[in-house]
Image 1: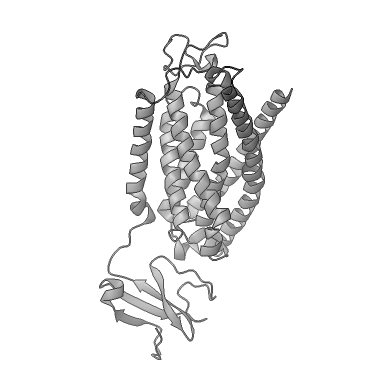
Image 2: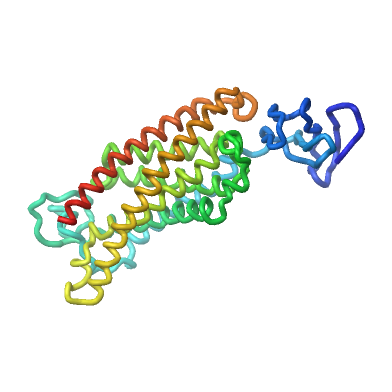
Length: 362
């Protein structure tokens, strides 16, 4: 779309391509850059779309005459469906006939006053034998595993296999921070974060095993991160890593937690092949969790947090939020604080994990 017209603004009506909306095309030159970047890798503000190439550089189109739905608005049906699906699956598993009735939980997780085993009350350390199934806790673990697998596998696939965050976004601070809403992988992961962390927060309140200040606080803060990433359409690159890749280690933690509640000795006789297989699976899950936790949540987290803070300072310091994402400044400061706070929390968890590993080895 090229024109010799001297004006920097060209008004067009093109019903086939813009569905009757009025569009405005500006030639992207060094002195007429709709993004204010004066570079060939400029990122258009919201509602600007590339509409062609001219001799003076890129062309962008501003679509008017109708509000474009925000990422949160487009994602709301998917989020509501996720809440309903998680709840329905939990109810079916915990109250239906699908879980084996003979699958007994460790005595540490059996309520003292409930021989049937679904009271959700931690027992005293004097309990000596399994007397419950804890289908409620098992159903919760299964639903959590499904959600964490969805997040972790999507994150690893997008970040390391297809490398979409690196390939689809400009490799600039603005590309990584302000190009939200244009990377489908980030939108999917943010939706899944809102679904899982919100649902997990509510469900954790019902289980004394999970009803701790640290865990509830972690779920709530993570929920806010995912929710406002959808509201302000920011940090798509880092959302894939922090919200997706880092949850890959949680898959193996969830499997390890399953064996804490239902140890191999309660599922099979020690002399059977099944017991040996279950023991191998448990050991593999524990070892893989430690390795992936260190790789993604300690080393990778520190590296990505440093880059994230650097990119965010660049965006804020250059006053780009007023043009591209007005009103999101507080949230970017919140995200920087969370990257440091959650990073410190994970270092604390690493110490706890290493103490547990040392205890097992002894």
